[in-house]
Image 1 (cartoon, rainbow, N blue to C red):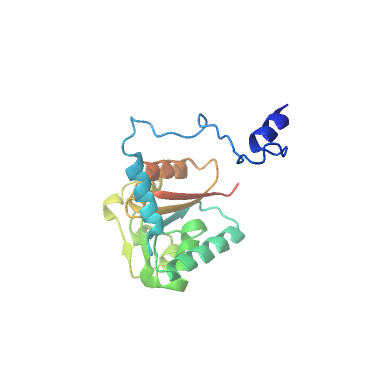
Image 2: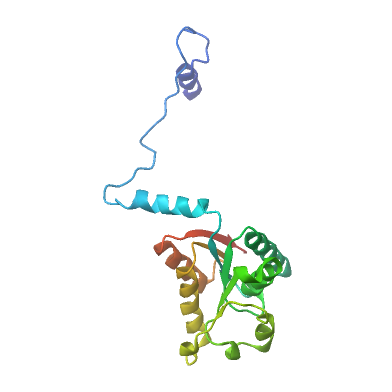
Length: 198
């Protein structure tokens, strides 16, 4: 029955070939812009402008516990982004997303890397301190020296997001801190790409 109706609408039965074919499109299922959301068009325009920029400030954050293959993917992606002229913003890390992002950006152009630490270089483990050798743009926060690392990292993620146009996040579905970071980025109307690794 439905096929018969569809055939008549599309004029597939060959009858009345002198008439042009028509396709009926239901409009009741289409997304609409609510009158209570006057800024929606402006937000979309801002996001489009960000995407079209030739070079952007891209934040790369994510899980510390990553398989080596995921770290290699992140490193390759960040190398390519930095080679295109984008500035990469991340934090310190001895393993995982941040470490891979630092390695990737350093391969392309050290001047395209900005590392924002949750606390000071001296509070980082020695392997992180070693990885930061040669990074010209490091932001330290001695004012957070007395905070727990978890609290300082949450504040750091927000600072990184505030400084970027686009966020790339590598996380699992159970990563509460990173989900909170994505929500914060959404509130700031950032362009967001989330890679779920589980």
